[in-house]
Length: 509
Image (cartoon, rainbow, N blue to C red; front, side, top):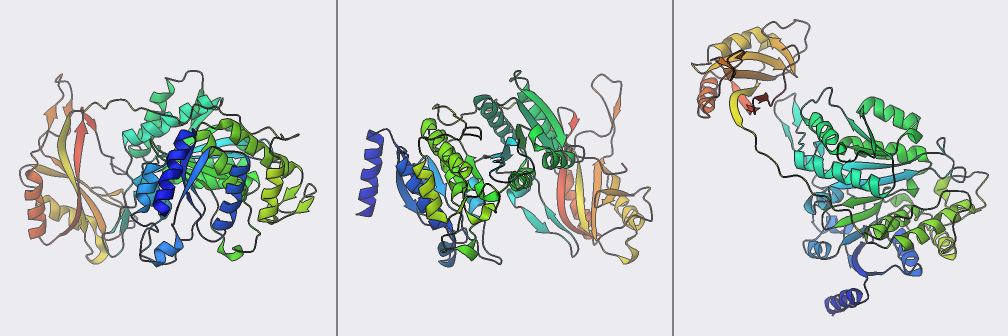
């Protein structure tokens, strides 16, 4: 009967031009703040119908390792958005992040966090800050591919794709254009990670040429984060990779005055998820103390995404007016502008009572428009000419004193007719040939083998390092290495793409 009622509600919603959304009440303070946010949406006459799913702690306890039951996915795919309250992930191993699972499964590639200060009503050292962090949501180190390879060394793979970079960066440019922003800042660490972070930076520069009206700049992430923390008002829209964006988002939310006021959007091609940026705060659950403002802000972002920008503005302005009037929850701290300390429901009551009003001092909620979700299209990829020119063989080798020269000379005897040993590195530092005795070495060694036959460039003017190799040469090399008693733990093939090296050099090479 419940399924029939939900189907009827969706049909009625479609007839009335409303959107069916999925709602998850979450854990800890989640049910409390979601109840008040739904009250506000109803009072503002948002054109939505609600279909609920269960996620989070109770599902983990029922044996679902990612905190969501299989049948919930049909609901999430059927409805255009998910409005989600915070959840609690149990401590210990065996549990997956529900947020990461939803983002990757539904292709929610763009994480958008608008952050502004509400000073002096909410104290902040940066009253002029008003910026948006646009973070890549699926790739980078958050691919979660890790291995322990030796007794001493573990690895985490950083995966970055051109399509993943391009659609996120295009989304950021389109968002800036639609929101009337003036500048985009890209942040990477491509002075060190020249291929992965370098790809993100290159795509940013390529896409920027299509938006000449927008100012662009690039910062190395360390100095960029420092300047963002010190002078956030100099930034407008910041677009960056997954891990960096995660860190930057919390930095700017904290210096704005309160993490409890922040909402975020996770946007894909067909589905989007909206949530507060704070956690489930189980220590105050059920006490009526929680601040619902972050989830209310997320609901405003949701309505704008759904093409209901006017309703979003009404809600956002009522929230701002409430803060101006000094009606604050406990987490906002006491200031000269706090006139009444209230709980969760009373705060929502105050916002609802101010629907139709505008702030008198703070800038009004961004008006947005009714065009609905931002759609981006990536360019068709061109396939470069790909040639195999070598292989990095990683060894677990732990002989006394870990003398790289001993290892290097032993491997040189195994190269065969096809290869030469170019170098051995330890933790990325070249240790053979020509290493230094001061270099600290672990039991994890990268041994680079390249084609032993040199070749000329196409115009005959330059002697290049190596010529293409037949793929079957590599298993033969690995067999010789294994028969010599070495333990191979990993290989990485070395390729050239249109004649350009597709792998990094070792430090000291």
